[in-house]
Structure formats: C-alpha cells, structure tokens
Image (cartoon, rainbow, N blue to C red; front, top):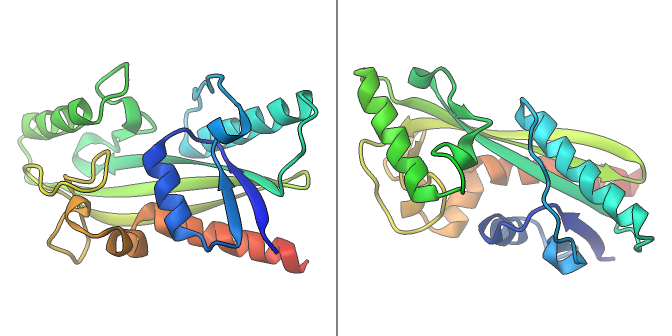
Length: 205
C-alpha cells in the first residue's frame, strides 16, 4: 500500500534525490504539491532544531486549513562542517555567503575562508538530520559522511557544495559521481535510509 508523505521542501534538487532514494511505495509530495507557499523561518541554532521547525510549521498549516493529513510529514536540514573553520558553515550552510542563497557564492566563500586559514587541513563532514512526524509522534534520525574539501571545483553534477566535497575513501567529488553512486554513500542517502527504517517500524507497530 502506498504511503503519502509530505517532504517540507521546495528545493527541487533535494526533492529529486529523495524520490530517487526512497522506494516507490512512498508517494513524496513537496510543499508546492500541497499548496504551501509561505516562508519557513529557519532560525534554529542546530540542524535538529531547523528540521523540527519545518515539520511543525507544515503540520500546523495542514491542520489549520482542515487539509487531509498525509501519512507523515518529514523535513531535513543539512550542514557542511569544516574542521579548519571550527565547524562552519554548519547550520548556515545554505546561506553561507549571505542572502539570497547562492550555491556558487557559497562555494567561493568556502574556498576563500579555507585559503585564509593557511592550513593544509581540509577535513569536513556533511550531516543531514531528518525529522518525521506521524500520528502525533515525532522522531529524528541522522546521516553523516566524512571527507575533505577539494582545492578547486570538479564535476558538473549535483548541487550545493558537491563540486568541492570528496567523500572519505574516494578520489572524486560528489559532483563527479552518478546519482546512484552519490545516493549510496551520501549524508542524505544515509538519513533517508534511517527515515525508511522509522517508517517501516511505524507500519509494523
């Protein structure tokens, strides 16, 4: 039986990835699919807080309008944490270079900030925290991948910082991998696998 889930995002890249990662038994709807056009203020201090804020905002919106409730609402928040920058950009990853959000500007700033440190330490990790609300119950899970930041951009695929992030044990940036290759090892892929486990447990409980 198909399970209808609302993914609290309008980021088409994230939406496409999640639809590729989760099996077709899950019907994934975006915010635009349900008619949500408002802004969700992501003012949390952590990835966990921002992920929760998105879910609660969308759930409250659905309830306030008497909309048919889906089988679940979930959201993710992702941060790139660079060791030499004290964990930055972290919770500010999507808007590292300021408003409006701009991937190319974010990448330029990251390379410049690393250059200014004068260190050869380019260790980094990507973390994705996913929040699921289903039947009044809220749960969180995390996906993480360690790696390094390249000295220059490589590849034409992906989005965000994909052309700079080299996963641990690899020699190519995320942007040089196929979608299936990236999804099998990425932070979001791992977080969605944890989400799938949560959904499976809910179905059998």
